[in-house]
Image (tube, rainbow, N blue to C red):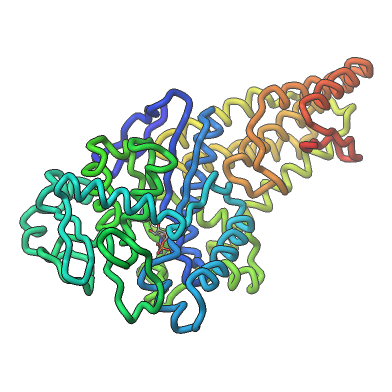
Length: 465
Ligand code: AMP
Ligand code: ZN
């Protein structure tokens, strides 16, 4: 059974997808006015862990991540640099994709850009207007009228009195009836240069919250499984998404809301505005490896705050090195080696590794199981107690673990395949028994599955064709 902590109920809940075997996943993406910092990447790496774990558990995941290429910051910065909004944001979209690759994040299936979804956003504003959830102000802005929506505040667990007093509201320069209402469409202002689109309410541009409601619905339907983001997104962003989407469609919006805690520097959130941030590029220039950064960001539970220190990155590198050394040692086992098969030990560990992750992505528990096994296997290797098929099961176990961690192998984006693992182990067995025709027959079968084997001095390794 898989359980996730749902922000909506503030409880761990069993995960049951809407369509059996499939998961619709929406994750709030970057605002492209600068390089993403590694605090942002804590969110994206948590989402990558979630996605990889769901795939390992047999789900087919359809993942959408938006790119916010229009908001106050992108407009202001592009004007300051005297560049068009598109030209300015293109640069940071490109660098974001490069960073995603460096950190070995599985790319989303779609990366919709807000500026490409204006018609869908206007449709949603139209639906909301028709149903009486909006009002228009003199400057041509359209606001969502929170008082019309019964469940406002249910995600963030807002106190209705606090809402009424208009305290915790977004800073917004546009006129509105009530402090807590938020803009769906923002009437054009001269200070925003020529950034504007036509709409039935006059020229202007969309509000940030509307972007995510329109794009998630476009790809995943009105009602989908999982929506993620950092805890800072719970209010107002996700609260407002729920209000807009549910009010427009009259349906449920999202079943499971998962939010990651922040990456901190000296107890403060790492953020652009505090100036206490590192980009991935800066850390790579300082000589840290992408794997050590990935491991650092993945290895603390996503709902715990994580303090950024260089010591943490160094100790992460040691963990990565240890896993890689185990792989090298297993590859060195001679095909004539006799000894114990460690298959049961390995499959027991994998079972527990997956079970821990199934408990709200308990990564510390999963890594604990992994390293108990790693230490055990090292001592068996030291005592020459591992057979060639034992080595096969060590390698396939590391490959499976790496489908989630993605820090050991050069490529770790293959779907797990028990069939391939079983064939490789059977071939190792056949070779150990000098049954060459059977070994060749298995090699042909693997070839038909698109897997190439390479028998190196140290052992057999495999790749996709
Ligand atoms: P932004 O580009 O500011 O919209 O943020 C993109 C994502 O990064 C959102 O899901 C934020 O919640 C998340 N985020 C921003 N800063 C941090 C941080 N210091 N630690 C973890 N996640 C963060
Ligand atoms: Zn969003």
